[in-house]
Amino acid sequence: MVMGNATSCSSIATSPNYGIDSIVAGVIETQDVGQAQATANIKNVLHQNKPVWFGWVLPTQTAWDNFQNMLIPLAQVDCSDTLILCHDL
Image (tube, one colour):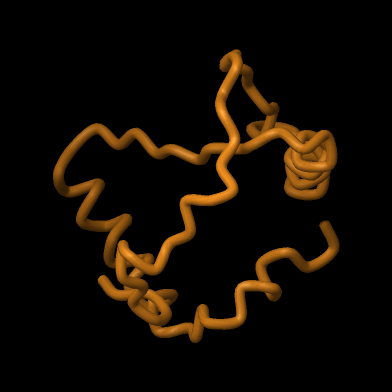
């Protein structure tokens, strides 16, 4: 699946760079709280200048296939304007 414009590895800036002094795992409550609250919880962490990592765990290859098939239409969206991803942060 190709999303947006391809970026070569050599074009990614490595300077400035910032060392990581420590990493602490945490959980952002997003399940069973409603979409608005889940979004607010994620935005709260981002507003603290902390990173957020999203991961998916699926039980079977069929589940992964279904997940990928759901994402394929989204790959057709033009992702070259990434500012759209920061809407209302």
